[in-house]
Image 1: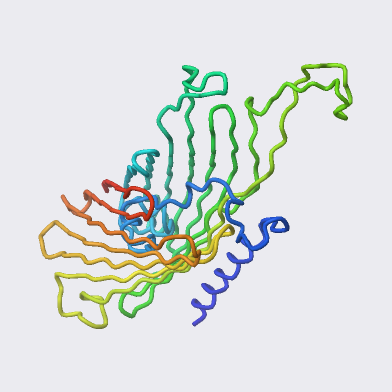
Image 2 (image 1 turned 30 degrees about the vertical axis):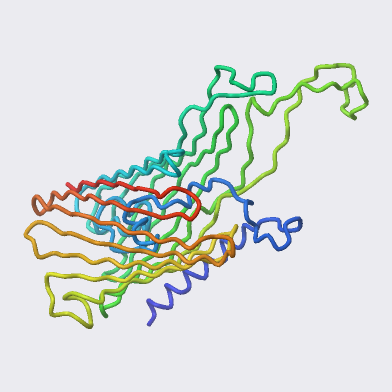
Length: 362
């Protein structure tokens, strides 16, 4: 009971930290703060397994993919693990690459690094004078580089922390920030139930700067600028500060099928797990995420999984989303394992998304 009290205290602390970084809503009445945060690529599912399970998964990661979910779980990975994800979004308009590497440094602790990169193909600049193009291209990209650690405090309780540097850039204009994630996981002895509490993207506000924000202004027309004698005075535009999408997650998972289940526990070759999570960010209402995973573990050295997920949004004009996917784990030895995952996501107005991931434990 004392351990459960500590967990709920941690959840309350996470909520207070997130609420401390409020968004100014004085000019956005009844808009739910939508569009008031930047670095929105951090909201995208980072792995195929996350996408397939409706982003509800924050437990049972068996590779370095835990760097993008519940980082406390990297302490349970044996040896070293690598994980890579490729995502093509919205008719290949955006390409996303995510990479993570973790390694065990003691029986209870592991360290990890991660990188996320979202970019577009080169886009030609057009102007009023050159509507057909200027033969000058620009690119848009988002980037996150992070380092973190996971620690198995007790047999049932784990905690993890991650610091990351994020950048959003379009042509010569960019914004950067340092953000922090905190993750906890508590394991019950009943039906393999696990409870997760996550705080993501907590950090300082930032704003855009760069050469593209400089303009030549004629100050000879009484503009109020101190020196009103220069017809081509260079002036830098002052942009508004913004923060990252701070997210609080409370999730739970449990087995309904398999040897650890409290119900259908006489089917040793099968494992069925249910996932449920609630997300709250500082720029939109709560969303509810459901996922179900079935694994067949009866083949020697192989595990095969089928997955499905569903996201329920409270926003009236946001479509609820279905997702599905599959996964394969090949154990080449007690130490070496290959992980391959795929996910398919539907969208109401845009083309479907395909997510591919591959991991290797050694």
